Amino acid sequence: MPDQPQPARTARTHRPAEPADRAEPADPAHPAHAAQVCHDLAELDAAVVDCRACPRLVAWREEAARTKRRAYLDWDYWARPIPGFGPPDAPLLLVGLAPAAHGANRTGRIFTGDPSGDLLYAELHRLELASRPDSVRHGDGLELYGVRITDPVRCAPPDNRPTPAERDTCRPWIARELALLRPTARAVVALGGFAWQALLPALAAAGWEPPRPRPAFGHGAHVSLPAADGGPPLELFGCYHVSPRNTFTGRLTPVMLRDVLRTAARTAGLDPAPEPEPEPEP
Picture: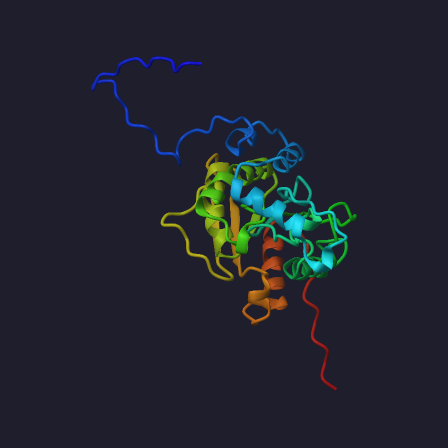
């Protein structure tokens, strides 16, 4: 088909083209559109797993599924975006970074199949916020009590490093997730600086008001975000990420993680198990 002639524009009516990172994507499957038409978390989770908006991440997650690791040659990798995990009325939300190529990208569930998840689920179970201490794969029967876990980037990135453009493309998923959790959400824990920075604009889009200037991330950081509509505020907590880089070096210990999770859970109105009293010395 020949190109259609374009109407002439005068200097008075000419407008410069909108930058690519601000242009409205035309594809109805793009997160900017697909997330907004989801009316509940089950619908959102179902839409997330079909996302193919970031070509580099799609190629990487599928390449990891083809090549596999020797230990997982008998696995049929999930190799799709990872939805959030936990009840739709959770008052506490935990936010990480992105799925691991041979962890969640293999097992189909967030923080499942790698050392980061091994520690996180063990501590949630110790706090009586999970039904068991281990997480094997999507659909294995594990339950979370009052806690939902999600990521700002839903596909496994090379070297665990999503680009700023990939983070921003993925943001509508977590922004919509937060909006759907607003009736019950009372506290959120950012696991690492990436999660902290990615969360602030998503929280603003979901109806909370981050302070200005933006608060700095730190382990044990705590910021209260009022709701724009006058509803209950959201309490944001910072915690070092549960990655082996932090846990193997002692930067984050199980006790440190447990303390943040317990504080956030109590703030959210949950009743986590207390720290046991030390055994008396003989």
